[in-house]
Length: 224
Image 1 (cartoon, rainbow, N blue to C red):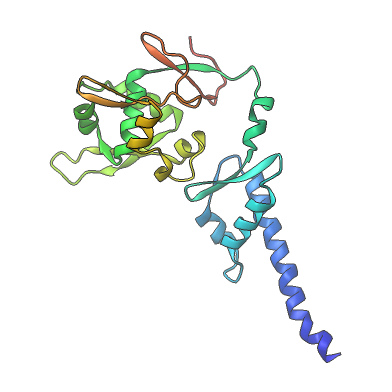
Image 2 (tube, rainbow, N blue to C red):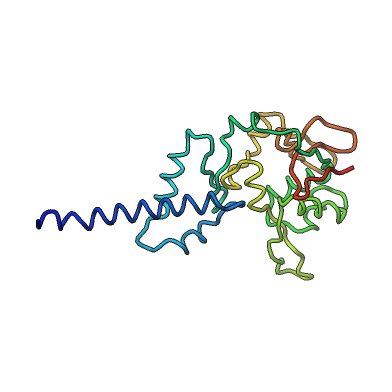
C-alpha cells in the first residue's frame, strides 16, 4: 500500500505532463500564424519544461506529413518540404518584384538594422518609396526603431515572415560571402555587390525590368 502510494505522484506528474504536451500541440495546430515561444510560456505552468516539450514534438513530427518548424523564436506546423510540390495548387499567384526590391531585401537581410540612407549608399542610387512598401506588403521587413543620430532615421530589418517564407530558423543561417561566391550567386556591378539569390524562393527566370517572385497575397487577387 505504501509503495503504491509513493508511486502515485510520479504517475500524476507524467499524466499532467502529457496533458500539457497535448495542449501545446493543440495551440500550435489551431494558430494560423507561427506562435511566439514567449506566448506559449505564458500559458504553460513553470514546472513544465516547454523547451523539452517542443523538442519532443519536433522529433515526433519529423517523419510525418507535417513538421513542427522553428522560425527564430516562433513555432508552427508546416507541410513537410518533400510534399510541398505535391500539394501546390494552380491558384498560387506570380507577382513581379523589381530588381531594386530584391537588392534592397538582400541589403536589409545582411546589414540590418539599416536605414534608408544606408541602403541608398550601398546601392548607389536613390530608393523609391514604393520599394520598401512592396517588401512591407509581402511581410518580409519591419521597422527596427530609430537610429540615435541627427534626424533619427528609421531603421529596417527582416521579419519573422522572412524567416518563415525562406525556411530559415535564424537570420544567421543566411549563406556567407564565400558560400555565395562558390555558388555563383554573387555578382558585382557599379556601386553594388548584389546578392543574386536565384533560388526558387526568390528569383525566377530573369527579365529585363523585373524578377518573378511567388507569394500568396491575403486577398488572393492577381496583380495586372
